[in-house]
Length: 413
Ligand SMILES: Cc1cc2nc3c(=O)[nH]c(=O)nc-3n(C[C@H](O)[C@H](O)[C@H](O)COP(=O)(O)O)c2cc1C
Image (tube, rainbow, N blue to C red; front, side, top):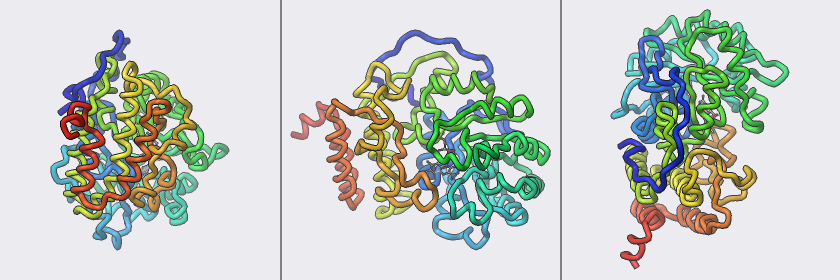
């Protein structure tokens, strides 16, 4: 199923100009992607079920959640789940986190031997726990060590090695251009830039000017990341940066079809249509099923909670603004996000990302737009019911009821 196969609620206006650069497939070393849209790795979120959905609904590549290069953690339940790729379409992209060149090289070899087609190195993670161990963003402050790690990993595997970075440790110590040169010299095959420094966390809007500067220096595939949440925004960022691709994280939560929307917009200028309530509900049921399958019922139910609320959020967006689905952020202010019941935090609903990622305690879903629509009240009710549902059966029943069409509701009454 593609997003175009999802029943739509409304048709949109005129086509817009299309840049030819986005028509060509993206090449990363020997790999060819079907388009220039990447799902960002998000610990606790971009597990196999979510990656598979995003790939099917338009993402050209879906990078798995970061995993530690520490060999003592390789066989923990979490690591095993994160290394689970059965049934996932290639290329399989895994991400490594670590600060020791030999361990990083050994971990890369291990994953390449176990099916990874691409190894991504994370030097953007801002988590204190990670940076204390000199990994993640901390490597932005140790360029020498960074170079050793990149060379060791590139030398250890035959598959392409890519880098995901922020623009520097802090606004006053931005070193993206030097990091880019180090990566190029080490043989890195692609660089993704999240347009914030480590110190910025997620507070300020992402900027993409730094990536444009890097473009002038490097002849490598470059990927822009940060706050890209609509087809129009993707187009604007590509045009402004001359990046080869965009990577999307939070905006895909609850709407994995965003990738198809962007893909069609970039290729044909086709403005997206919002999927119907029925289609969103069906997709969510399928997603839940895959989560129960991967995690088992008890954990699957907990992991599923945040996703249910994110999908509900998207439903509210499309039903609230059927005339402009998925094209632009809701005109309501961003402040609504935290006040809305659907500023669902990953931590209060499942606990997983809080431990892994500092963003875990904040509202993950971008601006919801239910004010005045009654959806906000329904969202609060749904949220409390979702937290109470403890079995898959209860959760599925809840979702079926919440996403039922008026005709189905009438039938059930
Ligand atoms: C909950 C959460 C977990 C994340 N985990 C990872 C990760 O495992 N590896 C990584 O490189 N970035 C991680 N990130 C950062 C994202 O990949 C991305 O760079 C960031 O969210 C900005 O993109 P966006 O505005 O499209 O979400 C995470 C972000 C969030 C919100």
